[in-house]
Length: 203
Image (cartoon, rainbow, N blue to C red; front, side, top):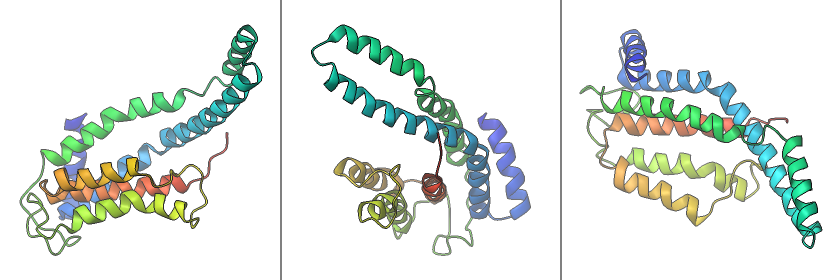
């Protein structure tokens, strides 16, 4: 799959003649292709959340009757057969994400891009640490906006220390030392993922 992605990326690069623009277009292309799976995953996760709520109610209702609880739980699972599909779609997407990462990690050329005018070489880290900062912002902004009520989408998780720490650690330990091309890929991917989170889904 990585070889196929490299071929597609090179075709886009030949068309744009700009490595940064090619990264953006290629990332958007793959993300759009995965959008049906992403929507199905969101629907499944929504069902799973509702299922968890109903399970908690059943446990409270039948806390003194284990046999009846088991029967009602089994019935609940039969009524919600798609509740585990979200984990399956995530599992199916993982090889694609790995192939995308390898495409940029092992196919980086020594060139600038009009997208990042302060960087002379996309194979080198951002000397001004702007990309790591942008990564943190794009990673945490939806959660912050949801936390303060600007975005009223319940599927967007609120900011917590458990969500802030990984974003900061990735920036400090990885993006500050990685090629700028990878940083651009992660930022574009974050932005598209944030847009996906705003798409309303129905069961």
